[in-house]
Image (cartoon, rainbow, N blue to C red):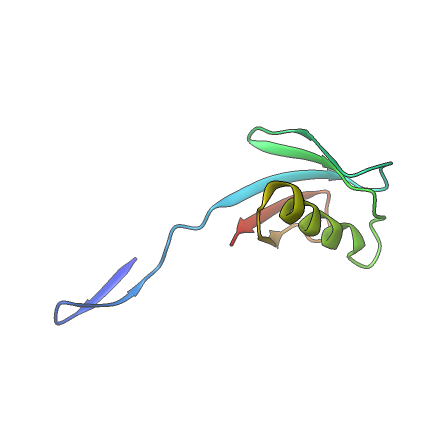
Length: 84
């Protein structure tokens, strides 16, 4: 979306990239099982008090150099992440 006023660009909203993820908490180690339309990822942290979510974001940042935030599914195994 672009907004112009007297030929001056005031605001430009960039297209947001999203990533669908299916996580398996309480695994023996952190690892990516498959990449496709939906990434399947094993996370060692338990699904309590957001620990698995934090571990997922740290793991993606460390291994894939992806900074992201959870947009949908913070209390579910199926999540949608927004790439920052």
